[in-house]
Amino acid sequence: MEKPLVAAYNRVSREAREKLAETCEVRYFERSETLEDPAFRETMAEAEAIIGIEYEIDEAFLKQAPHLRIAANVSVGYDNLDLEALKARGVYASNTPGVLNDTTADAIFGLLLATARRIPETDRYVKDGRWQNTLPDDYFGVDVHHRTLGIIGMGRIGEAIAKRARFGFDMDILYYNRSQKREAEEKYGASRTALEPLLERSDFVCTMTPLTKETYHLMDEAAFRRMKSSAVFINGSRGGVVDEEALIKALQNRWIRSAGLDVFSEEPVPSDHPLLAFPHVVTLPHIGSFTEENENNMSLRAAENVLQVLNGQVPQDQL
Image 1 (cartoon, rainbow, N blue to C red):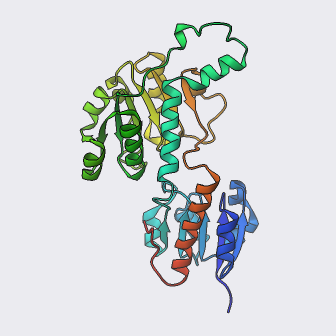
Image 2: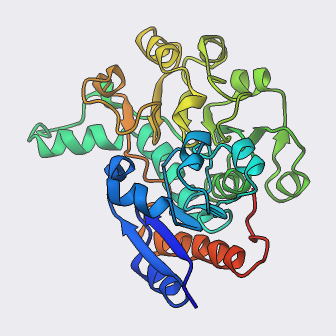
Image 3: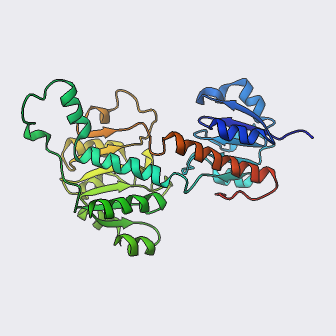
């Protein structure tokens, strides 16, 4: 019996590929440029599953994949998947929720700390040989403990961040979310608010919401103007949640103190992007879930979704 063909691309771990290869034919395309690769197009003409991260799986893509049964993202995010087009074609879509919660929360809270205490700046101060005596006052950071953290998007990762903030740093937690999170309120003393009071009251504002039509440019000029001038902004969600022109204006005019960014509207971010010129902006290359152990766990979870569909089941992480 002929094995089903699976197309794997972009950061699908070796262990996950080997697991798939036990019952499937797996063709792996390592680099993102393969969308224009004739070999990739040939594979998609036959493939029953695609597993990976980043490709836009939309109607145009699906026309090249007539036998596709599942598009499995190795990510909790899925803004690259056109869910309506997939549903219309009878193709399952899946992501990897839960696997990366703690790993991503570690990274985003680390970004918050690095931004608040200006760790990259002071690290460079030492390495440049400028540390001769007492650090100048203009390198002062801000305290994190006993401050107020506002979380926009209280999903699983948002709750993991709230846990670190509450029990590690005695922070007060505000959150803005479509639905009430009673467990987070009970465990971490979190208070649900509207967006405006959250922005006005928080010392740290952290966006952790998915990118949707409703959240696109949620953080616009009006939002940044509502924040405290002493506040720190952290984006750990998706670049499109933030109007970057508004953020640049907020930093230039000191409407906010500083920002820490793990994501950008365009990735990789262009080297001449204005946000990279601010010394009080900490920039990371989208590393929220980027540890070897977690990347492997995400790949394995996505592979499980693929195998479930190929075995006639509904994927456990169906979108």
